[in-house]
Amino acid sequence: MDIQWLGHAGVRISSGGTTLYIDPSAMDYLGSAGKRVIEGLEPGDVILFTHGHDDHCDMQTAHKLTGKPTALFGPEGCAGKAGDGFKSVASEDMLELGPFKVRVVPAYNIKRERAPGTPFHPKGTGVGYVVSAEGKSVYHAGDTEPIPEMRDFGPVDVALVPVDGHFTMSADEAAQVAIVVRARTLVPIHFFTETEEMVRAAAARHEVVRIRFLHVGEAMEVD
Image (cartoon, rainbow, N blue to C red; front, side):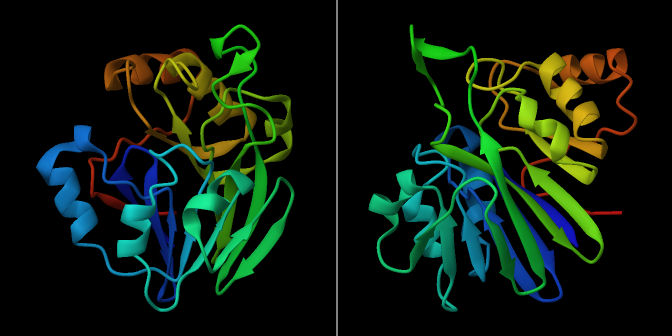
């Protein structure tokens, strides 16, 4: 099983000739190089969305990657955008998609809010995914803060964790999550205000054993 980072929260996971995308999105801030990565992708067998925000449930990009036909899954907030062929999922659903077994897990904010009482990502509106194949597992956290349920997500071989420092997690929180889910490797994604140097320092403070930074378009094998 291998993972390719597409920039922002987008990833491509491949196993046994089957391709699964999570949150593919051609974000403007990725520039021309990032857009070329998206344009060079082949249609997938499965596309998973973590929540309905446009930078995650980007149907313009998803439709470019649809065509085998492609199965689309995500929480209810994506349903109005996705159209026919979309299936809604919720926390603790289990999916069998070709070689992949996918566990749908919670993702939400506890303290980060747009306004008092209004979280950026309210509980029940978004999800993460634990994707397993070939005896390996990858946790894509979606947009979330550290939440109590994470204690039951691991162990995982790779944790793809947001480190934007504003809407989801700080570098320190991301390192803590890697420990909680017992990840063999932490791969930071969804950068915003946090930097690679900040994430490295946080990983060292929390004794994260392995951390891997990917360039946009770069792939890694899950070992």
